[in-house]
Amino acid sequence: MPTARGADAAPIDELLPPNCGPTSQQLAALDAAVAAAFPAFGSLAPNDSADIKGRRHAYLNLPGLLEAVRPALMAQQVIIANTIGIVPGGFVVSTMLRHSGGGWRLSQFPVLSLTSSSAISAAATSGFRVNLQLLLGICASDEDAAHDAAPAAAPQPWDQPAAPAPAYAAAPQQPAPQQQPWAAPAPQPQPDSSAYV
Image (cartoon, rainbow, N blue to C red; front, side, top):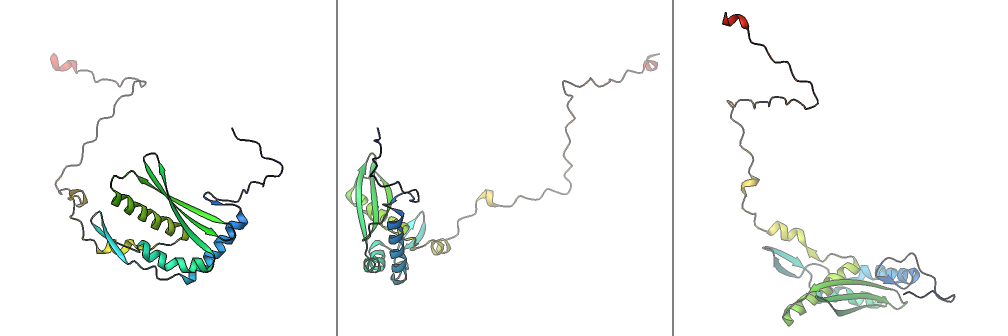
């Protein structure tokens, strides 16, 4: 059960978005420091690639990303902290930007349970890289190049245009109107009695 806030407790900061803090002023100082560091970032060009669903995907690997951003962030008194926490069904990679003024931002990347240590290490590294890119608002991958370089997929039957209807085809028959149950019955034609005389 939550306890009541004391009279000397700090007021709740209503301006804070999720996963950051502790106050909007300290968060603003962190954001200003990251903005000042941004022009000094090194190259964010992709330096590695991987096959993903049959396509070559170019990206900036974690060592290259850290080399590009860490010196500029440190010059603005911003550090990068990364941890792994065990949760039911797997683990979570948590990455945080922390400023000397106390402001912080957090990004978390969930990972499903993996059996081999090499797979866990690869997933943790990918989570760290993705978290850091999200926190800094950068995209260090080349999705378009991977798409353009991929071979064209074989055409599928449903991709083909429909064949035109032949010119001699008869117009479709319109169904006879159905009598509605609430309508009066239509009059029926009476037989001609003179034909039997």
